[in-house]
Image 1 (cartoon, rainbow, N blue to C red):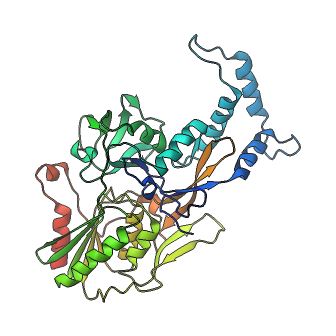
Image 2 (cartoon, rainbow, N blue to C red; image 1 turned 90 degrees about the horizontal axis):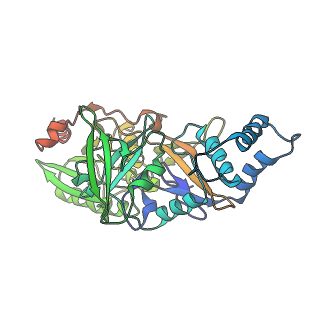
Image 3 (cartoon, helix red, strand yellow; image 1 turned 90 degrees about the vertical axis):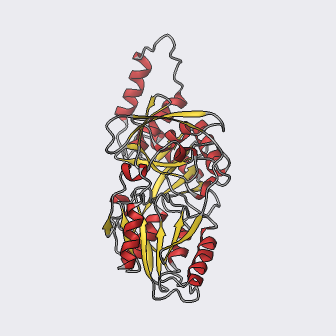
Length: 414
């Protein structure tokens, strides 16, 4: 099964996608926030049968549920401005509560109106500020602002916690709801209130939404070291990496930095294919685990031979903005001894979501699998720990210093 790390699924689309939220604008939104999209008519039937099966058939005693339903019907008195709650809205709320009981920020229920908006977002154009967000300790958190984006220009950093959007608290808010509020028409602005590590005051930022141009790759040479910065894992990333590695071979350099900082991920297959440039055929790149007592899938290197990339020394840079596909690639290269990981703890996003369309127009986004490194380390649990930890402090940014890159260059020259 072709899958996007942290992904979801829909219909005949073979690419599940990451459950990381996208607050940006680009034409093919599915490549980052991959949702495996799939119409499952039986899912609606099973949810309905759970609530409306006969008493003899019930595996769970729902008496208390119906008692609360009836008590609300008979006793609740709303404010003068409160509209009557329909049975459909009550059922939507009940299902949403059931889904929330699983405690997974990436498993969500979308009533029909929200489902239409969400599915439109992942399949077409939308306006945004150019950053990926996810959940960390139940708080909406910036994974990474994209290069040359409004978010980057506004000074938003990886790891910033978003506690308000246009003055509305994000407490109890899921990723998808937060992303929906951040997106909007090009030229309009959104006000974000941020909490930043080591900062004493709240940070208030206004960001003007725009069309986001997403770069894929950039190369440079520095002091005999070849540097490849990979910004995402899109459908064209493998081809771009092929060009970059050919450039590396022609340079004659024997030292390589792969910079995955601020790379929020993308297609799983892109990560596997890129790992195949560096790993022998058959080596495990990532394990896909579907839970206890279920056989896991393994994605293995195809052993691409790009005119013998041999006898070189490699470092991979990661930070809190490196997520999903970035963590899969970095974890595989690190555990197989191809490269040293340098920088800061990665984000820790290693789950796959499936988007199931229900008969009434609603949909359920549910986590169906989790990702593990070749050695069985859970990516979701805490991310990747660098071999050589190096902090990137606020004062380093202000002084235009890059201690993590400096550490990588130093390691490669030793």
